[in-house]
Image 1: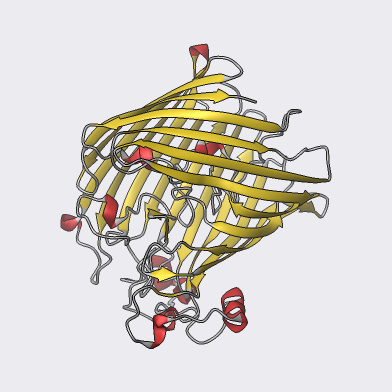
Image 2: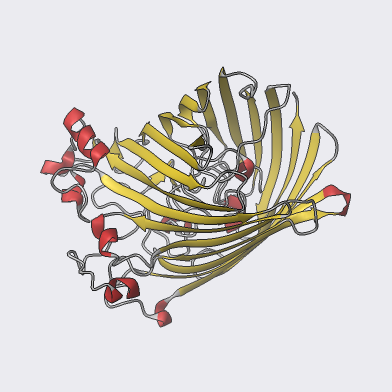
Length: 469
C-alpha cells in the first residue's frame, strides 16, 4: 500500500505536509492479507518498513499516536509511537516506529526509530532508493540535521545535511555493531524556480561489534573506540576504502553520489535523477559508474485521472567486473580489478539488513525471500530492472496506483554476465484508496508475481484506517 511511502523522508524533494491546527493524532489500521502460495506478493510486502510479513496469510493491526511540530513555533517538539501486530500462524508484535524530536528553526535533533528514505529522487512512487528504501524496520539512532533545504544566498542555494549514529540488531552473525550515517545535499535555484539542480552524497558504515560465534581470529572483535569512530567519520586510515576494507577493520562503507534536475511550472513538475552507488573508492576510477538507479518522474499538480508517472531503471551488473564505457573513454585505470564490489553484502559481517529485512532497494532480493533459498545475503545482486509507477484519482475520489517491475537477476561474475543464466521476474500491483469521511478510509490491493526469483503468487490486501484523533 501507499501509506508508508507518503510519510516523511530522509532526503526528499518535497516538503513534509503542513501540520493541521490539531497537532496530536491517533489512528488505527486493520489489514487482511492473503496469497495463493503462502508468500505475500513482492509489491505487497516491499517498501512497508518491515510491517508486512514475507510469508503466511495474516491480519495486521497498526496503532499509531503522536504529535506533529507546530509550524508557527520556532522551537517545538514532536513524537510518534507505532505498534504493529501480526495475527495468524506466526503472531508477532513490532514496535515499528518510536521517536522523540526537537526542532529549532530549520534544524532538528531526534532520537529513536523513525521512518526514512535515503537518497535523492521521487519519494512517493519509487521502486526503492538504492541505499535506504523503507523496506526494513527503521534502525534506532540519534540524528541531527536540517528538516529540509535551508535557503541561503537569497534562496538561490539550498543546503540539506544529516549526521546520525545508530545501532544494528544482534540477530545475525554480529552483535553490538554500530551505524554511522551522514549526508550533504545542495539545491541550486530558488525553490520556486523553473529549473533546479540537485547534487549530493550520502555515506553509511557498519562498524564495531564482535562475532556471536568467534572464529579465533583477529577480527572476532572490531575496533569501536574513539579512534575507530574518527576513522569511520572521516573515511581515513589504512584499509578504510578498498573493497576488502582490511576485512572491515574500520567498517564496511556504502553510499551513493546523487544528482537531479527539476523542471516545474504551475501545472507540472518533471524530475530526472541519478543515484550512483559506491562501496569503495573504485567509484572515482569510473569503473562502476554505469551501476546505479536512473529515474524520471512526472507530477501533475491538479487532481486528475493520472497525476503522476515514475520510470526507473536500476542496473548493478558491473560491480567491477568490467570497465565502464565512460571509464574507458577517459582512460581511467581500476586499481582493484578484478575484485567484485558485491553490493549490499559484507565480508565477515551481516549484509545490509535489519530485523531480517534488506535495508537497500527491495529489487535486490534477499536469498531467504527467494525461490533459490539461502540466508541473510544477496547472491543474485547483479540485475537489470525496469520499473513503472502510475498514480491518479478516479471519479468518487478513489485514489489509485499501479506498480510494474520487470527484472533480470544473476551473480556478479567475471567475465561479464551471461544472459542465458539470468533469472527473470515480473511483479505488479494495483492499489485503490477511498476516504469515506474525515475519520474512516478503505484500501484494496491486488498483486501478482511471476518468474524465477520469487514464488509465483497472486494475492492482495484489504485495509481500513480509522482516525481516532
